[in-house]
Amino acid sequence: MGDYPSRSASTRAGGSSVTARHARSAGSGVSPIPPDDLDGSRPPLGGGGALPRKARFSMEAGFRGLTTAAGAMVLVIIVAIAVFLVSKAVPALQANTENFLTYKAWFPNDAEPKFGIAALAFGTVLTSVLALIVAVPIALGIALFLSHYAPRRLANPLGFVIDLLAAVPSVVFGLWGRDVFREPVQDLSVWLNKYFSWLPIFGGDGPFGRSIMLGSLVLAIMVLPIVTSLSREVFQQTPLMNEEAALALGATKWEMIRTAVVPYGKPGVIAAVMLGLGRALGETIALALTLGIVFNISFNLIQSGGNSIAANIANTFGEANATGRGALIASGLVLFAITLVVNMAARAIIYRRREFRDSAA
Amino acid sequence: MAKRIEASNVSSYYGSFKAIDNISMTVEPKTITALIGPSGCGKSTFLRSINRMHEVLPNARIEGRLTIDDQNIYDSDVDVTAVRRMIGMVFQRPNPFPTMSIYENVVAGLKLNGVRKKSLLDDAAEKSLKSANLWDEVKDRLARPGAGLSGGQQQRLCIARTIAVEPQVVLMDEPCSALDPISTLAIEDLMFKLKDRFTIIIVTHNMQQAARVSDKTGFFSIDKTGEPGRLIEYDDTQKIFSNPAEKKTEDYITGRFG
Image (tube, rainbow over all chains, first blue to last red; front, side, top):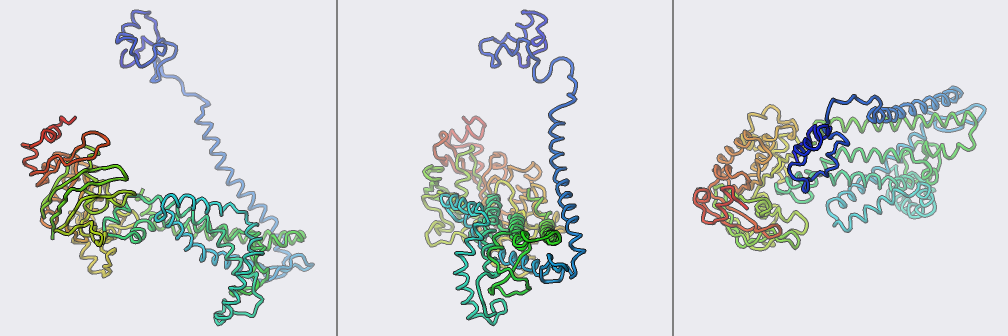
């Protein structure tokens, strides 16, 4: 057949002689295109005849509309939530007879409502930061082990188990922390108090138990899987050629990881840590079950005590009246603001090194 | 500052697959040796065996004896990082560290080996970049990312990084295959210059390049896919390209390879 199906083949106006000359001359038996494709039932893909009109309602426009709508929905939801929160919070804040930002107790249901966010915000940030301090080094260690040291046969099942840890509901962590993990943490607290009570964070005379330390350790276990699996993912994406470049310069495995793998994964690791921090800040039920629910600002980690914004909402929402609910919503707004600041800080850190990241691609 | 490489009966494996079979050759100090041959014939595998980069891949191993100035680099008491410091390597695709500046890239190897003094690092960076014919192009932007340079500049940056640790031998695995002809020429000029100080072994698919730059040429080939690669002929470049002893070599260099 001819290299290109000619127009005479598609229109077939000339009858058999024309068709035969153009399309079948090279022998019909071995033609790679079935003969019925050439009999004029449809034009060739490259187009025969005049250029067709552009379709007025095409799939292109449809998908464009769908994706734009999906994107716009995010904004609508955010604005709706913000309007709701602010409209509920403002009346409660106006009824408050104490300074919302500095007062350290929570009595919004009284005739003269008194409530402040200070102790709650402090407890939220302290437990989350402590959880990260414990979890991040362990998570990075596990991630590097899985991505660069463990044999594949071990790394895949182990990675799966860690992902499974992320699937455990937080209420289960909370109950486990309250009923099982409390014992060893209490023993540890007593020991720390006995030998390190000269450090303010381990001081006090008890009781020990449902403390900031217990809450933070449970939180640490909960954020561990997120940070681990995301970090592992970015470490695995290190280009082999960069790892080989380091090795060829005479680097040991650990030096290679320090030179090529960790710097390459740094933005991803920061993002992973921020996601973990987001989970820790917003964690509700596990902290409601493991913290001592005391309104104070204290760096003592082992005495019974501690509270957080989300745990306070869970604990007091049931008995709250209208002002009480407004007060809790106002505390939710503060939590939202904290998370926002943390996220923006993380983005700023990543943005600072963009020149190096972008040129890496 | 250049050493002799001697391979005797070297065979390399990936798991149970034998990639090269029984290679023996001697590379004299301060010469350029080109390894040519069709794809998959084991040139790169052999090259990577010389600085023990072969064993980085899982299940890779080697048999036979490879010496650098009569010291077996595969002896069980030899520190593999010392081997790689002594025998540097430039890869097929330019691979500067993407997170590092031009300056940091050049001194990366020195820092790995514990050099911390700023003045030493500065001197070494300038010297290496000058040796790699890159200094004039980058001296005003040493703090810019190394990956922002053009492909040819990146490859010269990688060469600078390799020679900054002052190795004895420099291995180049198709260093110009990702570069345009002008950058290629720049790298070839550079190789002539470096020959005074280093022993250079280069794998190339470009036979004109082998003919232009090398003193000696080794021709590798395989009988068919799945068979290990063999060293067919190893001789002076002049002789290989004008009057090869083996029919296979002649077929390959005249383009009648089949």
